[in-house]
Image (cartoon, rainbow, N blue to C red; front, side, top):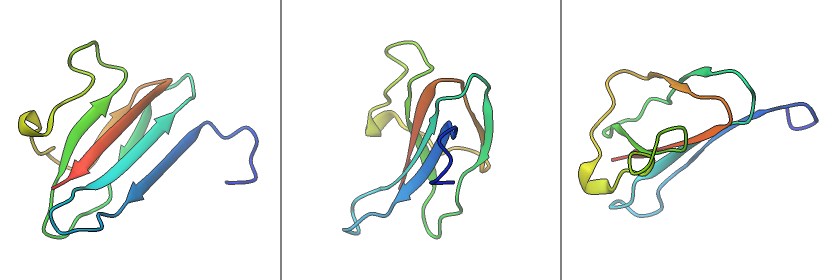
Length: 88
C-alpha cells in the first residue's frame, strides 16, 4: 500500500547482521483503532517486547535484560502508538 496516501499502519522487520544481534520487528499504528497483528515466525529465536509507546513510563521501554519472550504470535498495537520487538 505504498501508494495509499490514507494508510495509517506500517510494519517491517529488520534482520540482524551479526549472529549476536537481535532481529527487530516494528509496528507503527497511526490510526484511531487498536490493531491485531501476527508477529512473523522466527527460526531458532523468539520475540521479546522492547518498546510500547502506549504504555506509561517506565514500562514503555524495556531494557534487554528485563525482556521476556512473548507467548504466541498474536498481539495488539494500540491506537497512535509504536511497538518494537527484539528477536533473540
